[in-house]
Length: 144
Image (cartoon, rainbow, N blue to C red; front, side, top):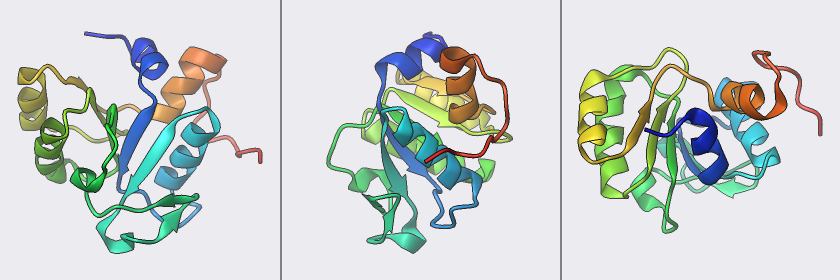
């Protein structure tokens, strides 16, 4: 199993499930941050499909993305994760990453059986700060 630092070093394409078009929401703040540090982020939100969030076209589901995806980053309730895990397997992503407070044991078993890395209850932004910027803050104000 790769370390979080290795994952964030070698994988740069993220499908972010549950991104909001509200700039004050955690998901949108995390998306903007990851874009700032060189990640290509594909926002996934069926209610905002076809709109743009932070300059990227919103897809309804991760299987709508034509590009290959490295990390499926989830901002949805734990009970929705198993369906997302099935899509993660179908698109052959490398990592299923569940944000703070999100866990799903069935999804973990499913993706690990397919040799997909599983991370739960961790924030991509906070982990990036910790490993690359040596910062440990929850959500500092983003600088434009």
